Image (cartoon, rainbow, N blue to C red; front, side, top):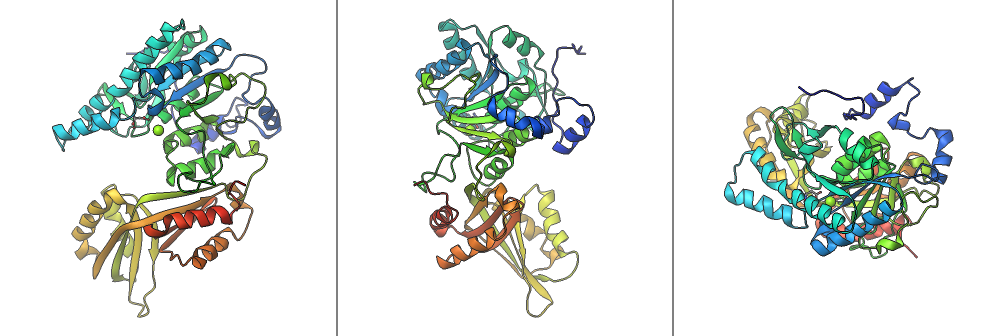
Length: 473
Ligand code: ASP
Ligand code: MG
């Protein structure tokens, strides 16, 4: 049995709606609207909260930022800057770049069919190494520090081994030690599933989520994600050299960008940041550690990208980014009956097999009796999806199934779309002028996605980037 102490911070992650409900009327610090409208201007001016005082900051270092001991020393210089400024610091580390891939490969080599709990036991080890090394390096610089593995905190998760969700963090002891000036170096990517007492990992890229969750549990002023790029860009700069760094981007836009193909942050980390209004800054660890102002600074330094509330973004564009995802596959079911219940018979079995379906288009066939149904799944799930459809053929009743993974999904994203008409029309027009055919379309309030042939991906991204005025001069 575990006794709860008053200082223990137990954070569970409900939905945004539940959060709003549970805080309604309490007059307390509702994480959904951490900055009520009249306070937002002030919050913006103070940049990271507390006037003149210390700040609490979580600093996450990704795999390339801790790729070897020399890089760990460099990361430690960033930590030192914050410590010297009097800030309270917790650090979250990834495994050395390439380490997790190697661990995954070893597991697969041992057996393609393996126990997910043992997979987690193996792949969680990469972070253990970097956490210990980081603490040692910090100590050698005269900074008080200790490492924490997920289970030691503990960071509690559900039992979805391999892609577990954080269910809560009991950060009481870390909080006390951090307040007393010790740097806590926490392993990213992992936690403990308390029922069976097993190590669980959070899915690839999960250290971002560990960092944001810890920042929430510690009530940090900001979660700084140090990586190998200097921020979030309007699109992938490797494709469009004219891509620009976004100084600020809203939680909602970042969530779309992450789930639509931008690899900068794990999607779940953005979900958490959005629900709890945790400002999350993406910046490069390769910047000179002394060229960055410590977080408690009163002035706003224009580096990296801050993921924040949309009301903090003064100059916003209608479209703020263009994402693309290559790992899409298209499935077309030919000649299914055009009558009630058919969609359920197709998508029911796919859902049962845990296959995510994204875009769906149903065509009308001239004879009015049968129709074609096109949809997309993750390319890696295509073989399984085809298998499921084959198994359900008698029940669905179709003529044939065709598929292709030579497609990409291109998305334009921007909160400005809520108030501007014609964004989609412009997009379709521009693509048509370049002779690019659209296979499927989906939209939300703040994004439009189209599925096109992979061969046109770069042309489409470049065209749209220019079209919406995103090119840097
Ligand atoms: N090391 C893990 C991975 O490579 C987690 C992370 O780096 O975020 O996916
Ligand atoms: Mg990452």
